[in-house]
Length: 144
Image (cartoon, rainbow, N blue to C red; front, side, top):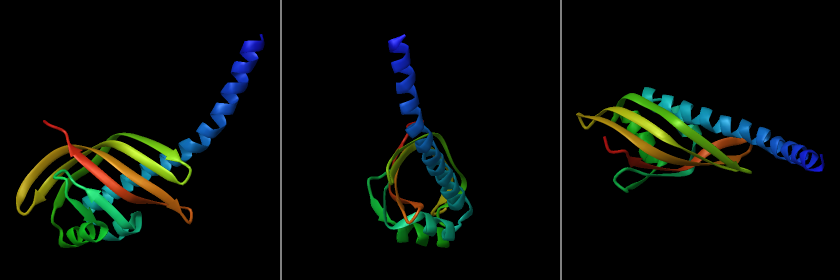
């Protein structure tokens, strides 16, 4: 009886923080989906609001770009996406920092040439003034 009471107490102690973290994890995955939709539709305003001013992307060619680079591309409409969707996401939250990993499927044209690629991504977020912002992203192509 003593060990089942201890197990129940431990279960309760573990489940309370997990519930609080799951709301943050869901918020991060929802933000990932909103950002994907913004890229798909060329919505630079939403992307600008979602990315920290110091945001960096390490792309599939190991080139580092910045928020202003992404915004410039979105406003120019190149690349033009016909698909920008995420799946297999997992989020982890550590206080006011969070990481989301998953797969993103991208289709469209860039420089007039079509592309169709799936990539694993790792996105890092911080919460400041009650709002999550993406501060870094990294993508790696998944061979077809």
